[in-house]
Length: 390
Image (cartoon, rainbow, N blue to C red; front, top):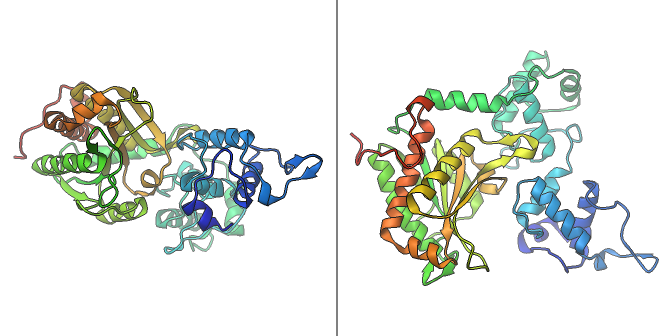
């Protein structure tokens, strides 16, 4: 079973069997989440063709997903499989270098980024992607150590890196750096660049319930938000048109080309239980390992509270996730789930033009608040923005 086939064409879950499940079991074993020995049945080893996604694998997958900031559903889809592949790498296992067409990803890269950040270098966000900022930081480290600054972490550079003790112990250097960047950007929205990402689109309607569909509602809210932010002096970009549906990789690539300060991804939710409803927000983060977007977390919290206060939606709170879109964007990206279409009360609110306008104002206010210094900020639900940029 090829990696491409497993990660892009299938979602493996409890009760499935076959060579792909054997591969999943092997990877979980490498991580210490399953016994390393192959399973046996009636005194004989089970061949890979019969490997079963049993309750032990289900529990291991859920534990792994919870550790990695993924949706804890026990299903090995593209996101979970990608993380299983990345988790096997340890710093020093391989040579790391920057190749634009095929960037290396893995836990070893994230460990390197954290080490560089702790020592005062600027590898960018700790996201496990060996991009140009990480290569430049490695080059700076090499230059400081009297090594050839080629931006590649080979054996010699790795030995020097391991011999050095961290110059920063404790704390969160990335938080200080992002806070300083926000302060320098100033409180004015005029000149800020924001990407708005309406979920789904084209032939993909998203969640459909109560005579409404997700793509149409988030497109209407996006159009309103674009106009509201433009009136405040913000330059906005949309990741799709009304009739297209790029995938998350394409949306992240487009956003990165804009040089935006912030990205807002708009979605609705659905659930088999019609009683579940409310708004939730998500930002890039794996807080169990000390990795998160400080600005993303701050904006997600502000937007969450404003939406709950202004729209009367239930509060499902903010959460750290390592989803592709949140992780792959250079700017802070927040995904806002604006309610459950499968919940009758949420659906009624979301069909209301008045509530959509309130949601737009809540998001715009949250954007403004993320740039305000603490002494100029206002309590949730209080701040009013001008009707137009003067």
